[in-house]
Image 1 (cartoon, rainbow, N blue to C red):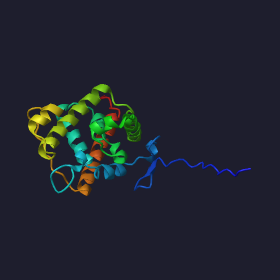
Image 2 (cartoon, rainbow, N blue to C red; image 1 turned 90 degrees about the vertical axis):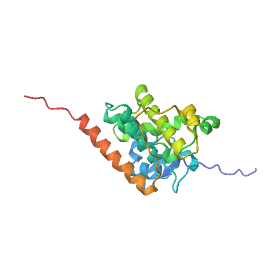
Image 3 (cartoon, rainbow, N blue to C red; image 1 turned 120 degrees about the vertical axis):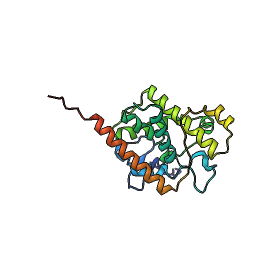
Image 4 (tube, rainbow, N blue to C red; image 1 turned 180 degrees about the horizontal axis):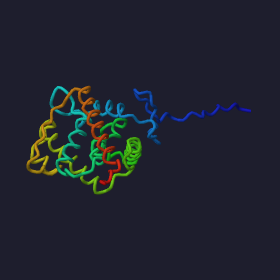
Length: 213
């Protein structure tokens, strides 16, 4: 009787080990395995535009996120602090899956959005935000995202203003952003500092107000 090779019960690794020591399951991410320092560290080292930008440093997703949050506040000054925090974290999934340009996402032929959404929901749960961002708030953040892309494209990615207008739409009057790529450690610190400020604002807004006597 021929001998059969024993079958292996090992499954492919689907988790990422973080510098904090956490092991994040990419297929079923848990909020308990998410730390802001891991997010900031990763995003500060992920390059926008696949690194095809001018300057001594890549323009990181951490810096992009800071600008998008700033632009969101400029466009919608009355927006609640929790949604400003959501704007800062809008690309947080990229700290483990990277920044893939939109044309390539479409060409992959897989439900890439599903991976992003699962990670986004886990990040939101970790920091006390609703798992799903309301459609209208998402629209506002996306608008800020496109405006930021316009400034990035024209200042560091080699696009003409006409090209940027066609792809991203012309930014509103009165908004002037300077894209100045920073070293990763500086971008990481700025991201964490802004996160802590916004989180404190969210917590302050959520406290019940005392009624006047």
